[in-house]
Length: 281
Image 1 (cartoon, rainbow, N blue to C red):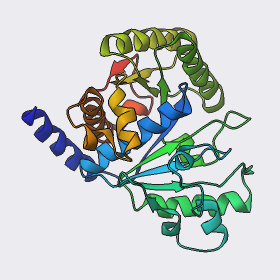
Image 2: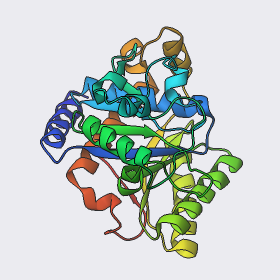
Image 3: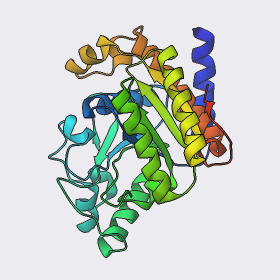
């Protein structure tokens, strides 16, 4: 364990020396609660490893991770952009010590190419320069696109659970993204499943995506079902802080290590590799 911790820390240090920032947009075929828990605990794991991680709630209906964190009353990035204020004003610290911001507040339609979009893009660019990694709580709009171009240009991760309905929805998300963005690769993160279950789920999704869409998928691994996640959330803490030896804590530390690999090897997510693969620290 000590050797892994040292190796992971070294990998994260190298990651932070690379180009800034790295943007990961997360789409989920699981419940909102599962997605929010994953984002908060992943963000906390990256922060504990020395990264300047920021969570951006880019959902358009006011039901994203910042709402779950009771941040719905803070100014959004759109509000500070429209008022000519500093992008830093949109960032709040969560109880878990992570920087978090909302793209908009409530249900808002963002017209592509509008002056509003340009101001929002500029504000996001300013905010992004202050972070090493941005984890975006995203969702597709009615046209299967994103409110920010940076979300399309960055890396996209699809979160799925072990149930058949979740797996089907995860594949449908990938299919919609492929139709809208064209051929590119995507990451897959399985939550609420054992490592063996996650491997089977990923293998089946990767084979289908390769055969029917010619799209390469990459496994980010899995986070097991663990009651310690809910117990930690009830105390307002990340699972790695409240229960550092729990299975979920181990999984999130490993996941942080995988993101270090992605930072060092951008080609993994940029469509320059073929077939499915498992990204390991």
